[in-house]
Length: 434
Image (cartoon, rainbow, N blue to C red):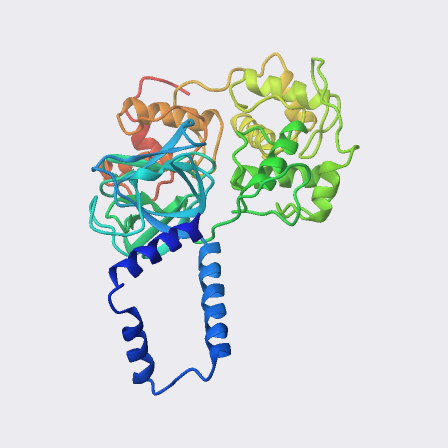
């Protein structure tokens, strides 16, 4: 397709210069004081030019969105499901494939060819030549494009999309070459690869890898109960955590990287293990890497107490350990994330009381914290109008931003951490007890 496009471009220019093409060419050679010695030289030069054209045609093609001002929809296939949109003027990268008036982006998604141009121009708040090339690297969802840092949403970029930045940034936001803005955290300078095929991934996979091999890896981890998030084809935090849990369960070096040894264990027929049902208190010490019906019971008990929000898998991974730690903190038990006799007795004892409520958390909370204490924090911030997202029990970007906003409003040190001073201010005047 790219070769045809180049040929068409060349023909147009040949027609425009048809009056004196040879005269111009010879003036160039005369200026260099050089003449071809024979027809063989001419043939060699022609071959070199042809190879150059083919090498250019085989690489990705830079292009721009050129609409009447509206964003251009991005689809999973020609005319398929919309997965995002590109603001007018956005720099994009095409892989050269086309189908029935649709062009495929390097990320594998498709856009309507009519609204794509090879020239930058000046539409949609900028454009022009590409600046710093980067890629959208989310956990699988699309990345919002905004008119200004934190401003109005004007489009979205699917995970894996190549983008062009102009080098400007402001408070954690980066500006695209077309003048719009995106959140810097979800931008990477590494492209990764989008491949095909199935079965066992070929080659080492690690954070920021992408494509079909990662899809296969996530699918396999999900089948074994280690990965519970959506299958996105992108190797982010959740995938790395699942790989670490699997490695611990198999006695493999724990590094979060799916190398040959890890993949061999993942795809071997004996990689399983069972997660059963049953009820009652676990009879043995449970810790990270444990699995089976005792872990299922533990997770069900933690879920009933509002401390465990993940799926019941029968495997003792990071989420289960975090829930156990939160329970231990709430009961004044040694916090080690291990469900030993004292923790189990408190969990299943008749006087274990209730966990949760809406009052102040009793410990410092920060990015990465989870459990009922974070639930309480989010609910309190929501009541005060600082937190508008869903109450998830996980202390992520949105929760940290809400805490920062609250701290600013109270003149407290702005660090995004809900420590004792912040919590005292948050829950002062609250009628709810903890």
